[in-house]
Image (cartoon, rainbow over all chains, first blue to last red; front, side, top):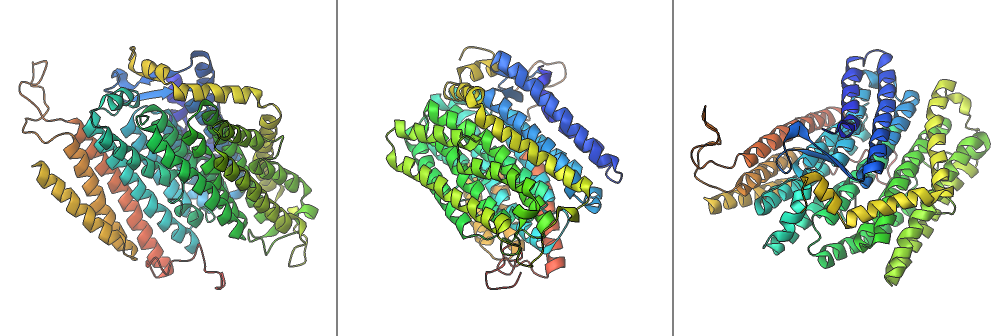
Length: 499
Length: 121
């Protein structure tokens, strides 16, 4: 048993139990915070071991693969777990300022920790049916978090979110059933060989498409993204941020895992579809954002457009493109969660997220303005911030393949992203407040402001660090991409034998 | 047996799609129940339809004495049913609460999160 793989999942689960028991006391929120710190330590330990050994695996209850449930971590899983823990910690701090006491009593922190456990489990599992179970853990927690605190708009958003996600889960589940019927195994490492050896490649491709649809809804790619802009602007900002940062990325991660490890028999067909889907995702997302006039709705549409870049990295399927995709995934989680945090604080100061109703934040809250600039321009891909390197890698990969149209769309979407970000900047920060008053930071108690600005500053600092010192991160992404393209290590570590 | 199961799965799926295209959220949920049953049957059928004995090892033996049915899909289906049941219970509670607070579960009228441009918020 490799316990280092178990702790990143077990810690948030245990925290959830204790936070639930203490939900009626102030201790609940401190338990959640302490649990998030412990999760970060556990995931850092996992990262250290993975950096030393490459790929690590653990068989639950000592049932050998492919019969038992396997937990496995390569570079990609490890970095996703670490970034989940970082986002979790940032959100746990932010929630101290934002979440009202009535919501805490409803078990907010327990649900939140459960969500983190589900996401982490999805990143670490090496078994397809177990992945489905983690998806469900994540889903039920996210359903509850989305509607917690009530309000007509939250219930409305909840219905759309719940309905479409349940359908996608069923598509994913029937894909699992059919894949088991064809290959007789559900272990992802074992599936690689079993799928390649199957004499029914046509059926395999059909199943691959079912997985693409199932994960595509989760990842919010074109044309399956409608639930996202319908729901992400309604919950608490802390929840929006953690959803925006992590949930769609689980879909992207699952796509990356399945379409590099298992479904590589007909790359010309599957990845070609993924390519067009990615381009349309990027473009429709950014155009949708241009039409919106609400801080969070703009950001929600930008999630969609940025997801396109990540799946584009997968679709191009070269070492450089995948490396860009992995780098993009990590950079985007930090930046996007941070932008939603900023939106929350802007609402706290100025009273709304509707860009027509707010303004004057640059004058009254220059620190917030500075902290908005960093993730916003990183999102748009300005050097020397992290987003520049992410886009640079993807675009370079497209140019190397002589795909000029892809290059053009990537750059155009970057340009339109700047348009949206400058729109938020102009309306929320530069324009005077329409009601004629200065939004004052004093409106919130100092404790609240401190809790909300700390994670924003921390994540912004990470964006800058990745931007100025990209070398180790790029090298890490390169190794992760190599492991994805040549999963021999992954397969041998899980199965314990040479394939 | 296989063709009969396939037929049942097909009918369930068709009925569920019909129901899910409805604007009323309750009908959508009924469709979802049917669809999840169709998926469960698919998983069950993927373990092959064979005439066999339960996958039990008699006391004192090392292996089952006769040919046994594939137990894994049954375990998967059981898990899926339990999870599906939980999610469905949540969805029903959500529908009830939405109806209680807003007076409607017609998805055309549910525009609180995304009000039309010309309507006041």
